Image (cartoon, rainbow over all chains, first blue to last red; front, side, top):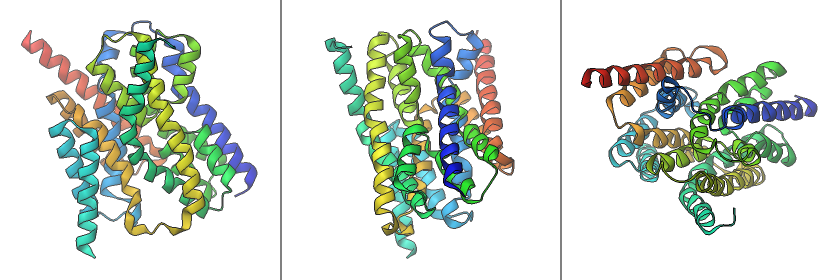
Length: 107
Length: 236
């Protein structure tokens, strides 16, 4: 792992990521999008974030990929509270409380 | 930008984001800790958090660099992880698209899971807000989230070694993601989309380069949109 490679990765990943972020908001402006696309976009959060989360919750890197009851319970708590109370911070708080409680009970 | 409604929108955006700093702090700290363990110097850690400012892809790139993966594989993996931001960009363009280009260019830089999640909740709640105030709100969110990310990456790198694994910092990020989508589970199509997203991501987690994420997202979006369309048609 050379220093040059690290810098090059940072630079290329940074530029590429910026272009991804800029894509629609920068180029499309306020031009109206087709109705079917707007409908699809309303599902972006519930389509992307669960996929990003599920493997991390079921096979957490911290346990070497082994399914961990504490992390499953924490994820379930965050999901239940978030869906029920519609409150993001409360959801995070309850998820972390369950996680630390379970980890503490185990020790 | 100095009108009173815009200034108050900036402050509202900042205020709404402050609780979220508690959530991204552990994530940023962890990145600092891990990059320090990988032998990066402070400038590299700081520079990456400023230039890339996308946690999941930073972790992925860090991991692959340590495995001495090919340069192209590392960058493409990081970009694949970040492709979801194209969808955020399209979604937020519905609200910010009318702003001047220079403002949109700055906003694009600060488009993250957190700023997107927080602002889209607000914009969905108050869709009639004028564009300048929406942009001001977004800038307020950026002004809190971005510096927190830079600073805590650095703190993590400096204080690094002392954080014991039993604090389970690894799981702050997944809990954040869950908290950001759970409130959106307000209709059957939304729940169906989330279920498809979870099932596909678990079934195809063996796919390389996080490709499963894009597959799951595309199928979930299709499922949600199609189901919603069918239900609306049946109701007439």
